[in-house]
Structure formats: structure tokens, C-alpha cells
Image 1 (spheres, rainbow, N blue to C red):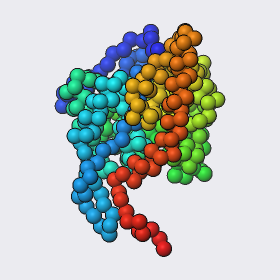
Image 2: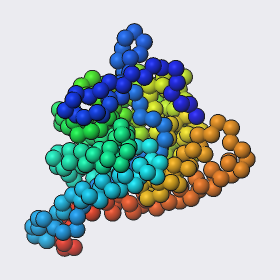
Image 3: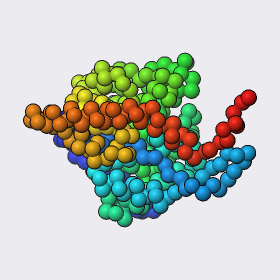
Image 4: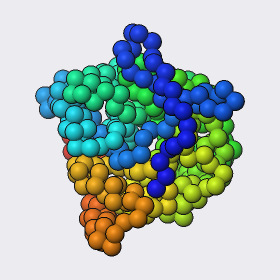
Length: 327
């Protein structure tokens, strides 16, 4: 497992109105200011919590308000358990089900709770799900102002049939050029009409000073290897993470810097321990055996989550009557 070394890290403070949060940028060769990637480890795409009392109801369909108290308490619980950081409003966080004001409210409340619990500068990665350039940039600006240090941007897949690899390079280059904070690529073919970002595309994008990593939610372990062990990518600047806890051991062995995975939302200590075992450079036979056994447990749970977890959260906020569909 590679850990960043050999670079002078100079974190730049945000403006005074944004408190003492520190922006992950560093001065690199040729006086280029480049983003720093999130630290290695186990990250969690946190769910968004809603209260059970309905605030609006129309024709039997109900909408529920945010439960900020539970959101804050859960965030501190995960941080105390050793989780390295959160993705707020990743797929599990229902980004398409919240308003811009609610996005800001959740990020601010999470940052405030973590600061109060002693987790200063805790890594927060804001999910950005948009097919429209200006909207994506606005989400990044709002997330930074609310307390996030990174954005993770979903590959745009609405017009998948017309999307080329050069188009993906152009899209993320334009986003990174305008983003007020470093970004990661969110590669999740299941929700982007099966668009797959090729390893050569990652090589091109990894050179951008404001693109600092990727979440690879793909089962193609060969592509994990090509993206995480490419001699032409500077891994002090670009951190690939597997998006599937089922692949933690294999992905980290191939060079990934951890996982950003939903299993950690329910079993944080197990996922933290699995990462530590996976990252050992010279594990003992006993540690190898423990890692394989724990990976098996995580993999079986991950498959269960893939079948039920997303569908559960996708219906958690809006409840429609059983006969509300077309007849």
C-alpha cells in the first residue's frame, strides 16, 4: 500500500467567515497549486435521515423533513469508530431527493457536530449529481461554503449512447477548472446507463491539478489494477478508492487507497479493520487468513446491500399509495 510522502503539504485556510476549516491544496513543482487527495482509509457514503412526522401530503404521497439531530449524532458515531471520512449526498444519501437548502443544512450540521466532538478538519466529501455544468459548479460552491473539502462528481450518463471517453475528459476538465475545491470522479455504471470510464481516461484526468481521486463502483478488478497501479499516474496526487467493500482486500492490494462503501455505514469498525489488514505491506500468515475471512463476511453483506439497501433508501422519504401507479 502506498502512502503519500515526499511532498510539502501547505494547507491554505479558508476566509474568516468560513471558520477555521482548511482547504486541501499544496504547492507543487513549478509553483503549481494542486489539490490534495483525501487521506487513505475507509470512507462511508452516509444516508440522509428524515423524521417520521409528515410535513406535506398530496394524494396519499407524503414527504418528510430532515432529522438533523440524528444526522449529527450518527456522523460523530462513525468518526469515533475510526471511519476516515464521509461522502455526504452520495447515492446512499439521496441527493436527488433534497433541495439545495437541505444539502447545505446537512453539510453544515455535520461539520458543526464533528468540530464539537473534537474531529477538527474531518474529511467531508460532497456528492455532486448533475447533468448540467452550471448546476454542478453551484453545488460545489455551496458545499464548500457549508464545510466540505472535496466534491465527488458522478459521471454524467443521461445521454450515455452519445457519450465518448473524450467527452468525459472534457466534462471533468471543465468541472475541475471551475471547482472551488478538489474533486473526485464518481464512476458508478449502474446509475449512469452503464457508462464505463476507461483506464486511459483516468490517466488523462489524473494529471489535472484539481482532480485528486476516484470512487470506482465497478466490479471489473482488471480496471481497478490498471487505474490504481499505472506508472504514469502520480499517486501522491490521485487516490483511487474502491466503491465496493466486497473488493477491499483485492483493490487495496492492487494499489487503491481504501474504500468508499456503504457497508461501513452499518459495520464501521469491521470495515476499518479490514482496510488496516488489507494495507499491511508484509502481513503474517495469520493476518492474511483473518483478512480473507473478514473480506468474505463483508462481501456477503455487500451483496445483500446491493440488492436491498439502495431500494430502501430510495423510498425512505416519499411514500406513495400502493395504487398510485398507472392502471
